[in-house]
Image (tube, rainbow, N blue to C red; front, side, top):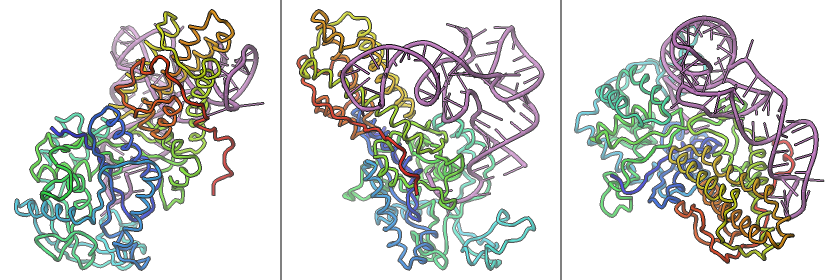
Amino acid sequence: MPDCTFFTTAIDYTNAAPHIGHAYEKVLTDVLARFERLCQRPVYFLTGVDQHGQKVQQSAEKEGLSPLEFAQQCTAKFLALWKTLGVEFDGWAATTHPLHKQTVQRILQNLFEAEQLYKQAHCGFYSVRQEQFLTDKERNEAGEFGPEWGQVVELEEENYYFRLSAHKEWLLRFIDTHEHFVIPAFRRLELRNAVERLSGDLCISRPKTRLSWGIELPFDPDFVTYVWFDALINYISFAGYLADPGSGLPNFKSLWPAKAHVIGKDILIPAHGVYWPIMLHAVGFSDEEIPTLLVHGWWNISGAKMSKSLGNAVDPAVLAERYGVSALRYYLMADIATGRDADFSEERLRMRYNDELANNVGNLLNRSLNMAHRYRQGILRKLPTTDADLLALSEGEAPEAVAAYKLAMEQYQVDTALDAAIHLARACNQLIESSAPWKLAKDPEQAERLDAVLYHLAESIRLVAILLSPVLPEAAHGILAQLNVSVAPLLADAVWGGLADGHLLGTPVPLFPRLEAPPAAAD
RNA sequence: GGGCCUGUAGCUCAAUGGUCAGAGCAGGGGACUCAUAAUCCCUUGGUUGGGGGUUCGAAUCCCUCCAGGCCUACCA
């Protein structure tokens, strides 16, 4: 058993600038990692970039750069975005890293020696322009390869193959016996059906004559390895698998198996659901060492799939600039159910931010602190109370919100978890209306009740801040600062009564300024 | 072609086969003044895509049709 919770994300291909989908996956994983820290569990968050392959090589040539230069330029954009969005990872998996190359080559060598790889000639139609073999799927209605492929020649080429189909029956049994291999459940069904139809082995090499930008096969220098074989291994190479002592990489045993590989639905089949478990199995990993796949959905725009080529890609850096990191992170976590698709809408981003963060939470903090200062110089009294409405909050709404939040987060349902936090804030606003502190303040006989109400508000807000902190680390810090709480948020502290008798609250400053008018039409 | 998902209020979504299908937002009406023109209360709004079937009971299970989407095919 690993002693550290290990999350990975897909590594992004350094061929184009990051879009909202990249940002979503990384923020989601960042939130899951931050939740582990909130629970005081050790966590290791690995993300990175996939820098090899034909597309990078081609794009680099177009720009007159070396593949490495091009990949590094693109990598810098991803790194800058993660910094902007507060995505704080522990390990950075860049596949051009020498230690990664070393591990990939060691695994290839082991598989070769175990006779899991073999060399075979393939004869087929090859597009010179696109530099790839064509299959029947590329044929047009007339059964021919269209002009978009340029010159097509019949070519025979030798390559190395991985004995994928030899492990098909094992994979089927594994899927059948491991209910939680794929989350959500319907994806597991989808995967199982795909595996049933699996036939043939996986070509894992490209001759250097047509692709040089990759990791060389250790047993045949005329070839580099296929992109997926290179990329998937990042999950173990950067976790320290087969690493030499003193490499600086983590201790593999402390991390593996990963709690979850967070990936998009597009790379479940075949890469992560077929190639990856079979690779691990072939290398000698036991069934208990195959990690769970947490498969998230897509942000669509106007219901259409996001695509750079359609010109509708949403630049997350622009959104962060326009609305702020908190608004963007909140929207990405609140407006999609993990595993499903959602429609991206700036209008909904503004709406949810204004309604839930500005009007509900932000204004609650502001009005509560304001009253505490106006009526009590900011000093809280922690006194026993018998008022039913206050007990309903301290013994009902608040602990129930924490429990619902925890349950949802453990099931990766971040949107549901956020609902629980917002619901608690809403209950506080209701308490303010029903107790009307401004009236209590005018009646000396109600002094104790006023103190109790103010305490209940501050205490509830403290809990809300703790619950929001994985999604909104900065804003949670801001809330706690205004409450004059200096300790870092912990879920263990999300229990009633944390604020001491005589606690002095900080000065109210509007925290989530409303996004007033929609900015002038984008672009 | 094969596989999978979705279809519930104007919008975004809930609802282990079991009270009258619920929230938030939007719409309508009202209240309040501590607050970021915020908040709170009440309220309008549904043939659960259509049609069959199983059941004492169906949004939920089965069949079928319709509509949209995804994977199958190197964009999270």
